[in-house]
Image 1 (cartoon, one colour):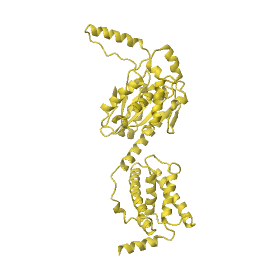
Image 2 (cartoon, rainbow, N blue to C red):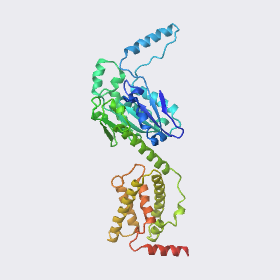
Image 3 (cartoon, helix red, strand yellow):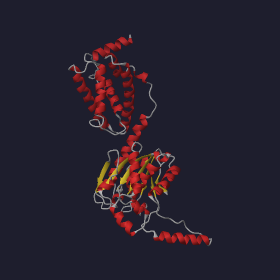
Length: 408
């Protein structure tokens, strides 16, 4: 079942904790009785932007009590006596079926879902993604935290399967056919999978390092923690490494969402930019009209992002980006002065190309600030910086002369 433990009217994102074998809500409780979600909610921004819930499903090491209850209930039913529902261990694909239905029925109000998964819970999450990818609710899953998940099996499950006949233990065995199929589908589904962050406990003897990181067509993001298989789900305080890492990722998600929402806003009326200095500098440099139109759109996109960064108090990140982009322009203009770049069209194209090349290196930033936004940033700089020109012979004098001529 899906049990909510924190809800607010304003939140559009839900974080769901999915336990593993023999787990429950207690999976997330530390020795002081504080839960993982409660430690995260200590951060006011996380509390304001996320709701929290547990997904609980039946899991038990032993099947004998299930058999006894099953036939006891059967005979009670024959005698017309009331009896409780008989629970049993389900295959991970069957548990993911249940989770898909809960999400479909109980998460209509959310735009984004995030899963925090421990051990077997991570395999349930992957099964959910690959087998229910067409579901509207599953498409809302944007991020998965994989805490000590045996993506490639656990050798301890080999021993457990010899002692206990348990389908969920069988799911945890190395080279298990069902899990291999999920891994194969996960790789095939790479363009549609949500982002996954792998957490590896350095003290974990149950899920070894190689298994804690799944097969992935994309470069995996891995966090290392000083935890064992159990403690990784029970941080002792908000300053525990696993708690800090999850909290930082959630805060980063908030920033990315805000920028993404801004990027999806309606396009501006670009005609209002005609008198901006960055446009006039392009015109007097005889830059092609198509490039000018592109520069206008990128300028507007970058302006929206700039306002969000200011609201989020990300001035350091913003200053770094503008400084680095300004340096790319300066280097290019030096080449223009040396005669290696012949005109404004070529100079503009060169700067745009260099920004694209450095997008994931020198200009690396939060993912939602794309290289298109960064292209716009060079035009923002051109609007306020008297030293940015797209032709060698132009200066503030030629710009003022052009303005005066246009106003006549």
